[in-house]
Length: 449
Image 1 (tube, rainbow, N blue to C red):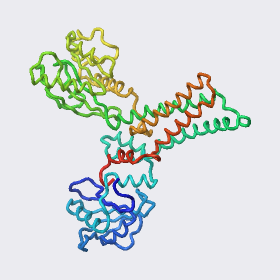
Image 2 (cartoon, rainbow, N blue to C red):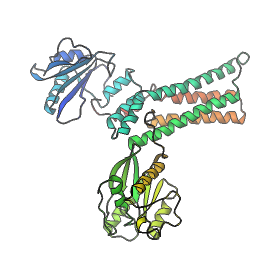
Image 3 (cartoon, helix red, strand yellow):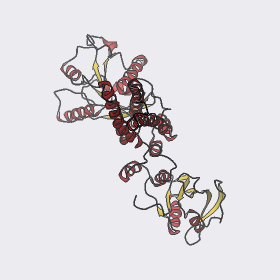
Image 4 (tube, rainbow, N blue to C red):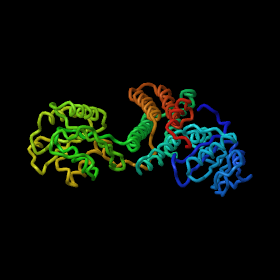
């Protein structure tokens, strides 16, 4: 952030464009002074909507709207905060912002309101990142998942784990410093305690991975030989005719992307051109895009015509996708099952027009994408790469401590690994975050939040 906390900032907190109402937000020690510069009453009743006339820097009335004043420290940012609710004309809003700047404010940077809230101790860094997730959420599930993080639940869970490890470390330190007075903790007890913390950290990592999927979605590439029924399947999963369907092989020449939701997780379906060895130049370009989509997708949804024996293209795709997350669907079962002999037990066999087949495919995508269990959206979860890294460092240190105990090495060697784990977990709340870390978090925000 280029400027410090000594300046009052101003920004529009509502989306750009015309609307019924727009909100102009100011935060900082001079918010009250600037309010008077805008022609607002000398004293505004805190946290009470007041009908006011808003004036420009020359004293000309711009609009009549509502003013809400939140004195420090009882505001979102922890500073004096003023919100002006005016009519949603872009020209009018620009004039209000210009008048506030003329009164001494400066234009806020992206995420600066929430950054000030973090710096003033109103929320931790994890909760601050959750604010951006709520703003960017595209599904109701993503909103719920971000809301769980906003409540600070992760900080509570991490604090409990740190308290457990700190208590063990203090006992070890006492035994090391005063061996004649403080008994060494039993080895079995240490192993059990560290094991419980490791289990909880593994759960945090797994929940974070699911949370990331709820936020970012799961990419599923629908691939297969030409005329296997890929576009028909896309249309069936969407419940609408989105992709062109034809009996002519090679109809799909480019990728088509659409999104559905399974268990609250956004699924980005990518319908691709049929993959075959002999194709004209235009179709070959589509096939190359299909291969790129397959390489980058989290899940491969392989569609094979189950009514005929698999050809070389189908066999090559089965071999190429073995060992990765995939769903194999033998389509056109209503026309015969000559191609499903020896199919994997987890393969889905049916037709894309049957509700039971579509339900089986959704369940298979969930298993391949995130293990199949319905995500618990009420539990707080890891968000940023730094949080995942902190959990990984803590798990590594505790795993080394467990190995030390299992080898029968002196118990006091565990103390150093406990300190490493405690330090790693201490970074989760962001108390020691560097400017680079803060910039990375708040660069996701829009101006005005």
